[in-house]
Amino acid sequence: MSSKDQPVILEGVRITHPNKVWWPQEGITKLDVARFYADIAPYLLPWMKDRLLTAERCTQGMRGLCFFQKNFEKGLPPGTPTFPLTAESTGREVHYVVGGQTKTLLAMVNLGCIAIHTMNCRTRSLHSADWLAFDLDPSSGEFADAAKAATVLAPLLEEVKLVSYPKTSGGRGLHIFVPLRSGQTQDEARAFALKIGHRAAQRAPALITMEMSKAARGRRVLVDVMRNGFAQTVVPPYSVRRRSKAPVSMPLAWDEVDPQLDPADFNIRTVQRRLAQPNPWGNFWKNRQTLPKE
Image (cartoon, rainbow, N blue to C red; front, side, top):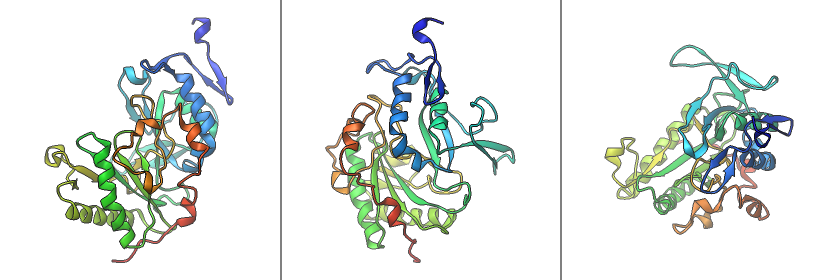
């Protein structure tokens, strides 16, 4: 191993191959990503605390393929918290990583994680949803279409007296979160999200669809509500995505949801400027709501 590729200790975590280039065009290395996550940890960790995580491992960065990993029976530093959960599909025990510590976050980055996905529930209440998530996925690949779809979905939530919060997905889409009071089940959350999604498709059928089949979508925006439900995951705010420029899933105010917005403007090199501004999601957890009975 060359001296330039010696491991680096960051926040007590051994980062191997720190100079491996994950974004060749931007010159962003594995260590750059690890340092970003160490710096952003105070903002990101509250979204991961006591939650089960799924790793999106991209060990070659933009150069190679990625794969998802849920089960971590081995390969993590000693003391990394895990939680056993029986998979409904196989009946086998899956050892999920439990988020909430900077060391855990950096250990996952060391394994090649760029994006880290989290559940909408905590280990102490796995069947109680903490939020609704709507994933607006533009089949056109244009963020402008997702922004237009959001202007249809937001009023539907307002009509049922629910406060919602938009964020960039880090790709070309948008996520809309609705904070929920404890005690509302995963099944209730998914059923309600499905209802809202179908209403959006009925209100703007040329723009929005609930069709999961890509062939049936055409160029419409899919309102994906399948991030709701037990063991489903979504990237939290401030997660890095494996996209050009290393964009970050960024909380927005509703007046920032504009078709002209370029989500890649929020990336690991610009986030600190953004954090110097007021946080549009600053009152998220103070606005926990009960789903209406319809």
